[in-house]
Length: 215
Image (cartoon, rainbow, N blue to C red; front, side, top):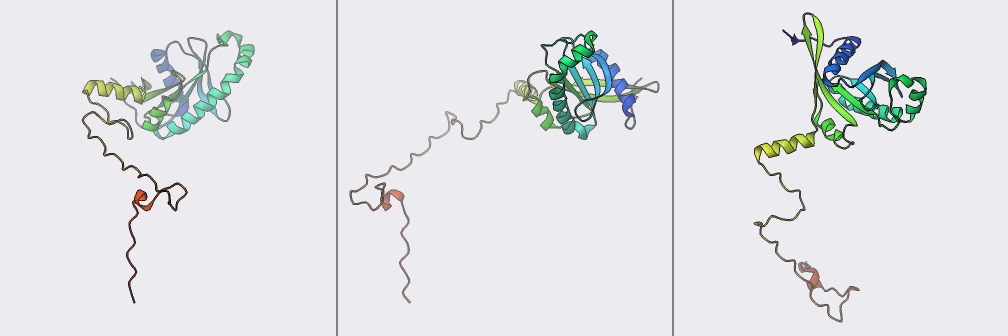
């Protein structure tokens, strides 16, 4: 019977456990390197996907999700122009020159900001995975769970509850809303107006000043 793991495992041990769990979740990904140095830091796991694309996998804690998103974007920018080098140095990896690299971010939990930010990128470019550490007969085991984008999750909630989201401010009013009162129109300016535009004080609806108080 599996039980929750106490504390945080050592990073090499956690890498191996996540690598093993990834075989069940995404068996098409072949891990080809661990701790691979990229632009400024090491990619935890570097793999090749089913379509021959490079896959960067970053592992962190709850509070690391924002930093890992930044590093994953850096990984994609770093891997893209170096695909030709990988093809020359390791032709047996099965890389496809026409594919775009993608990234996996693995954390115990993600903030709502990160889940919302993922929707900005092309589908599949960056994927979030939650992990939970378990122990089976004294051995570390990891359960991986893909995180659904916030936008899709909210749509599912609305369909399930039948609720209608409020309309944004400034949009067209609903049919049952009272019509707004018309704004007063400017009167025809007299020929002797003191303003260049021909406006009068009546048009501007100026409030008359109080008469001066006699001393």
